[in-house]
Amino acid sequence: MADSIIRPLSGKNPEFYGMSCPECGWRETLELDPCEMYVITLDGEPDPGPKCVTELPETCPKCQARLKKKKLPITVFN
Ligand SMILES: [Zn+2]
Image 1 (cartoon, protein in one colour):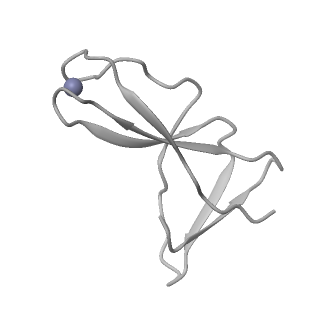
Image 2 (tube, rainbow, N blue to C red):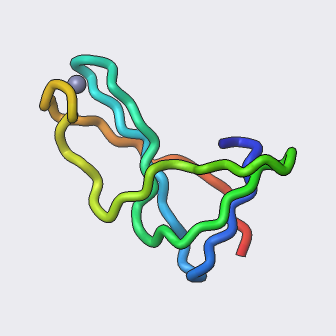
């Protein structure tokens, strides 16, 4: 993600969260709505980017433990 350029189409700043499970080690990067995004990488290859959600999950999809969340610093160019 560090080498990606991210362009929001809606003009709103997206928020990214790193979700992790302290019990089983499951982790995923999620993008919180707004999700109208265009993501490219510096080498020109398309980057699908993180999974888009409108709500952050609270429990682990694998073991149902309570997830930890960490907001990720990502540079956005408007
Ligand atoms: Zn888990």
